[in-house]
Image (tube, rainbow, N blue to C red; front, side):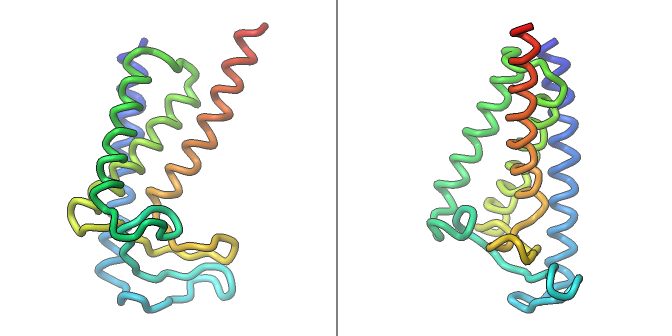
Length: 155
């Protein structure tokens, strides 16, 4: 079972990473740096930025540190899946999404010395990308999946 879980998560990670890199390639080719393009007036804009820090540009300039931290997260996810610590399908997919988002942002950190962000929405205070979305939704889904798994075990 752990190898099947790892394979499923890897497939999700590959799809997420590919979608993230494709969207960043599009943004880099089509958007001028720092120029805001309105997609949905008052709600959604595209603006090309490079962030060498973490979310909200925290610790800007620490690209190497965040690259290493990202590698450690990916290794931890592989270990969790390999050892079978999660078996719930939602948790497996969630870990794949987190890994795929991490890989997408790691590729940027290696390739362009920072993460390419280009999405800005009214209700979120910082620019982001598809990898960031996958990471956040993956963590949220993982929490739900682990909670559901615990409920099943108690019954």
